[in-house]
Amino acid sequence: SAVISQKPSRDICQRGTSLTIQCQVDSQVTMMFWYRQQPGQSLTLIATANQGSEATYESGFVIDKFPISRPNLTFSTLTVSNMSPEDSSIYLCSVPLRGGGTFFGQGTRLTVV
Amino acid sequence: AQSVTQLGSHVSVSEGALVLLRCNYSSSVPPYLFWYVQYPNQGLQLLLKYTTGATLVKGINGFEAEFKKSETSFHLTKPSAHMSDAAEYFCAVSDQIKAAGNKLTFGGGTRVLVKP
Image (tube, rainbow over all chains, first blue to last red; front, side, top):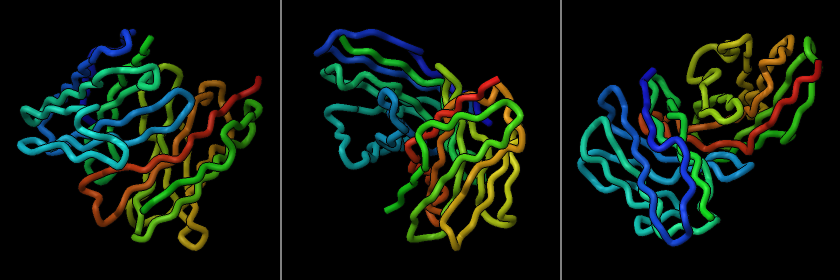
């Protein structure tokens, strides 16, 4: 399995501000995924970050709110823009596992006040 | 579209008793199926997965799951619960055809409490 480093591990932010979350993988991967886990809820896929092309967003998520960068095969960022308390969640990046499934980072626990 | 239903958002078991977590899925194509575990304040860890072949899959920490196509189920079991099994468990499905994309659809999760 890969080693995924996600930063920051947690943050408390003021509403109206933006936070950029970084995800670094120790090996090159074609796709990286960003998930959101709202308090007490399951995980929902936000988008797929593709190197060299625009991210692919799932229904209900838009680029203006969650811009994603993927400058190379080992790194991606997710920005949560113009935050509100409803954005308080755990944000997780993940990479594909050989043979199916996905390997998750430890997540970023975001609280918006 | 795919979906996953986990029956029971909370399960309480006694230490040493059987752990049974239920998962049913819907998928228009042959699925890949997964169980993940999330310990408090940690990320998700893959317990086991079914892709092809043997329908009884063994995972880490003594867990196993059986894929039953006729019942569209992938229930997770462990014969004897340990205190360290207290965590939240998520069942997930992805398209077998699009497996390279590994986009997962998750169930709502089941929180397991182990009583001494």
